Image (cartoon, one colour):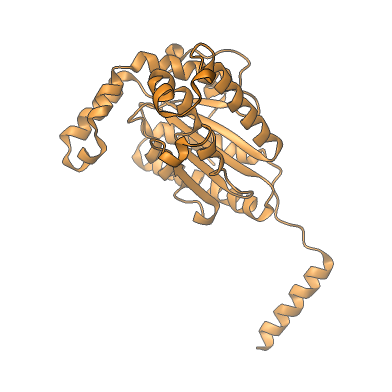
Length: 293
């Protein structure tokens, strides 16, 4: 790999609070031009695929990648570009939209818990259980009117801290049982979001991406920034870190995320299963039978 990105500036482990107002939306490029970017991304894809194959064969660890961001930050394209080179048997992607009636009949962690990755797999959440302390916090009527929680259990002064606690408990439980949790906040600027929305309107092939609700939610920008900052600070931990990724340059963003995924996979104690002498003898016998066939 001829590109090594220092990921420390983007890493939040809870040792000190993060202030999103101080976090950059753009940093110096880690690529020189479009061709260089493509070559770097392909290298990352190949190395991630190699480690994922080993993880699949090892069948002990799993990895959960959580992507959260404001609209138009590039969650879909980042997931697609980074994981396009990984064997489809080893990766599952779950986009979480508005909860269904069935999901609303369960606790707020249920719909994501049942989608957690199996051992040997990488699971990707495009939005996640964090929506419950982001969108629901910005629009608390979702909780009070639609989520069917008994009214006597709802205290809007305490509920977010309670949900942070539930999330921390879940992520600690996952880490204890072999699931590595990596959480990415794609940090898009307000100006760049506006430009991307305008592009979705001006370019006919992108019209399908645009919703009038996008403009409506943009009016709550400051509320969302506070909700994201509080959620990151309340749930960042060494075993479940957040990564605040500058998102105004999509190519740079993808390279940074790729570097993080690659180096964190490399920290796992991965290896192909050991083969006993008896098994080697049996394989050799099968080989001889095939040669004689």
